[in-house]
Image 1 (tube, rainbow, N blue to C red):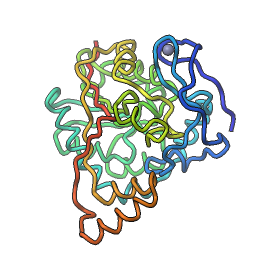
Image 2 (cartoon, helix red, strand yellow):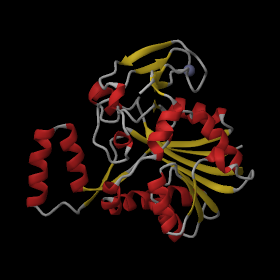
Image 3 (cartoon, rainbow, N blue to C red):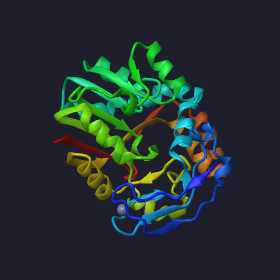
Length: 298
Ligand SMILES: [Zn+2]
């Protein structure tokens, strides 16, 4: 795998400081590492901060073509097994969207197997998705959804959508600013964008330092409320609000993530959870290190 140094995606700057050195060799990258449910937490490339604008990102990193190849090849049966737990989070996320834009045509960028499309369609939106993984897009199409492989190839007529959702996707893209600009073109003026990503400046991220589980090979960008807002503004959006993002998970899922991070603790927690018959309990969690950002197309 070839790695390349990249300029700052937000300001184009090339002066940066190292936040964390790489602890995962580039040669170990494979589509499996990029699967949504992979457990390769806390292994990452070199993470740097732009000295000009403060954007935190991975550099060097695989080329854009290599990253796209990996996402196109992702297959993820684990995601399908755990889908029910995600539905609860998506229903919660949809509430924030509906309060701001209760109807219309909705584009879900990174729709994967169509889990959120299903939730949004049930709620009355006309929906379409964008998804590079051939495996995931096929699952979504079988469920009756229109799925485009990428915004660039789709070349949508300007003003095609009233709402766009970008859930846990922006940090995976090689050119987030470019994608947001393409998205802006596909939206009508005044359209809503709702986006979730991690907050690298959050208290939890700062307390855990290198052990923060979101430092992962597949995350190319680590935003703060400020850098995310500035990027949206550069792409033609006006930011309406930044809030902590709430996820709703099964206790069993929470415990399996704990196990990947701290195996001994995870083992005890898993045994306890099953003994109590609590694996299916839904738990709303917010550690404050994930954020949801609402913005409007200008
Ligand atoms: Zn910069």
